[in-house]
Length: 127
Image (cartoon, rainbow, N blue to C red; front, side, top):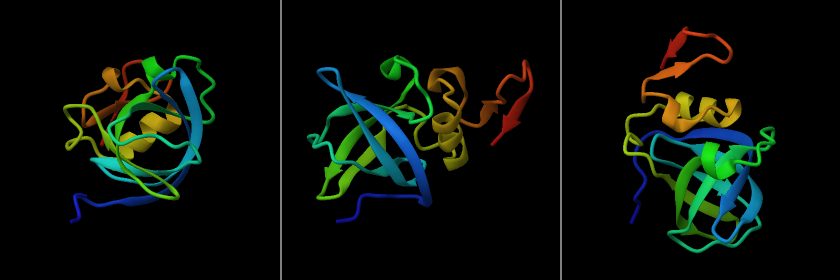
């Protein structure tokens, strides 16, 4: 039975992620939606593992603080199906999710439809 909903956007975003027991891995997001993503990775994680995603370009050691939280909901030979954790998961646009991952903006710092522009002071970008 298919559990995905919403439109999926093809991507090719390199990510780092942190899981339980200080495990850190890398992967590539092949697609992303408002409710989740699919990540190709060699790391084997169990279903319902909580992970925090950050881009490969982000060298912050604080992945668990600044990363986008997601649960592993599917495991296959190539990678992991992820579901976002935030209460507003269904309302945040795909563009906002990609911006958070690629710009390293903390998810707690934005509303589901308004994203701060990098180094812009009070200006915002409506999504």
